[in-house]
Image (tube, rainbow, N blue to C red; front, side, top):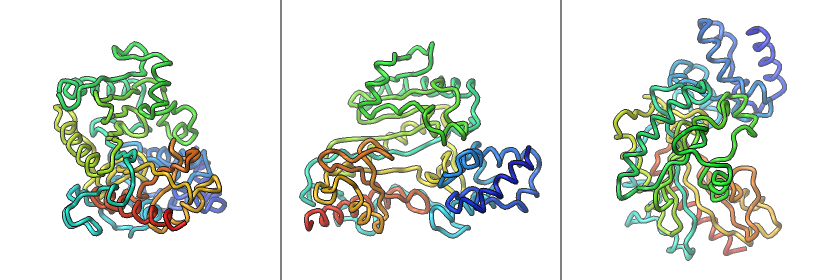
Length: 366
């Protein structure tokens, strides 16, 4: 079986130059591993093997995978994030001294002549004492959700948070019906059914749906924690406004609260920072984004011009419903910095502000 998989990887290496995982697979290094570690590494590559059109092609399955298989993952990270193989990540939320930050430190879109925008900052976290989602059993998923349900009681009791937890697990005390679930999905609060994602399915991340899945929502609906998606937790703050610092600062404060809840310990790597299932998110696990209308740059009904301007700025352009979704009828698009690794949290949010300033200037010139 292992020999067949190696042969398949070698075939893909010759035919799929954009599949990072298979391109970084080294059979000589693989041969030095124990049988148990060979099995673990091949599991990490399964999504890219089953889906040859993958760009990344691999997911970590245990919190220690990035360190245990550093000769492989260092190549993957270098190739995707455009960093040296020996690059080390540093986490830093302090805006002080960040290049491009306004003198008073306030990232206010109103100064650019923009109205209130939909702003969202999220980050991924995984608990140290569980396998990552790709290797979790059904029992693991249920136990993790039970642990988080207990933790959420701390948030619910706090005046700054309150709210409730919505579970998709049949029999859970907070279980919700299909109509309530769909309403939360439509409101962009809950994540979509993962069974329809072939990449996550092949990685084992979508297994046992919907067991162990759900989301906590604060009373004001501005703070959300997904449970059981691509990472154990996706923690996010969202707000309609002009000051980006507001959502950034609230996320940091909320993270501090969650991490200090008794019994919770997040997985970190000394070299790579925040541990996430997908190497694309490793380091900060952070995505900061805004929805902005660019009617002139999208006058042809596509985001082609916006993407051409955004890419050199290090920005990603998506539809308002997320990746692979259409732009809004009024030309609204989702803009976010692409970098996650070897960049600090503070640099990400500042890069978003600077990028929006330049995109808005181009829009006004069109």
